[in-house]
Image (cartoon, rainbow, N blue to C red; front, side, top):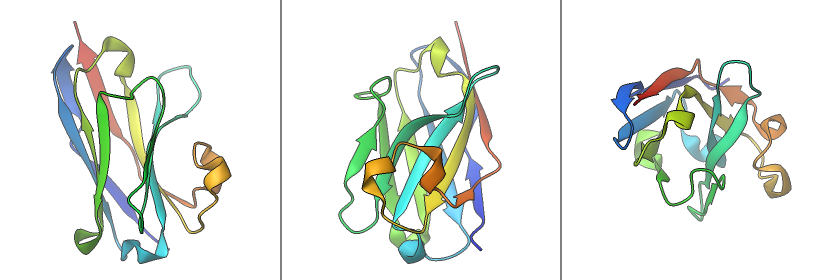
Length: 126
């Protein structure tokens, strides 16, 4: 079992930046894919970004491409999400997720992720 703990959420004005962190309780070698999802009130959980452990290849939702950057520090068992140029529509609870297998064809779907954090609230104000 892997526990994931997110931090770094908060309230920020539109155009501002936040950096989310996700600390894993075990080495990320057991979770070759790690990702971020978000869920706004009344909406389904949606993919934001993902990163592969060995190649560091990244994947982004179109809505955040060019504004968000996902990265990972395998030595610290931590994944980050740098969010810049935040918009009102980025307001959501952000969840960190980890997958035991590298099912790249479904990397943007929730079904391949085995572990989830408790979520951290990000609120963007005008």
